[in-house]
Length: 160
Image (cartoon, rainbow, N blue to C red; front, side, top):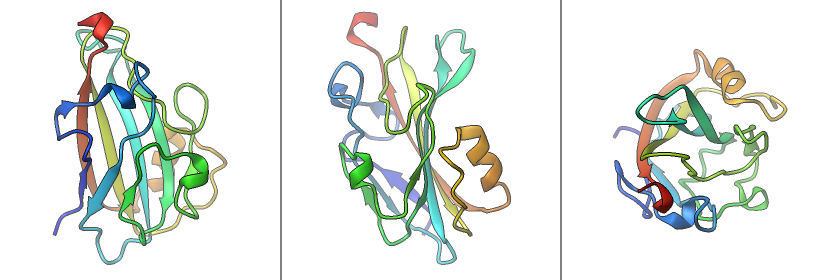
């Protein structure tokens, strides 16, 4: 079975509910995964938006959430997860707001896509001291054995 990532909050390519955005509680959605390969030692989750700032003229990928060393003994992250509710051993990276934790969709214009990417690694990474996405991706090189993706979309009511 292939690695798969889903959410009860939204379907693949579906609309992310406002609760998980800056227009609501700005809380993380529940994420569920299946099909973790046998030789996996840890999981990584990166959530980013390649449509920033404007989907008609994207200039950058905005990073919303960075988690690594998620233990393979868990198969989900609960909704509204906070640092004290992360699975034991999970480490956080820095998002593009310059802080750890989840930062929900808050697009300045148009409908953006939010890529929730789960990676299965053949190693447990060292403590990278709250890495950026780029630092984490460099540390992951040569260790990714599977990956899954869940894409959600969001447009702020004021931009519709």
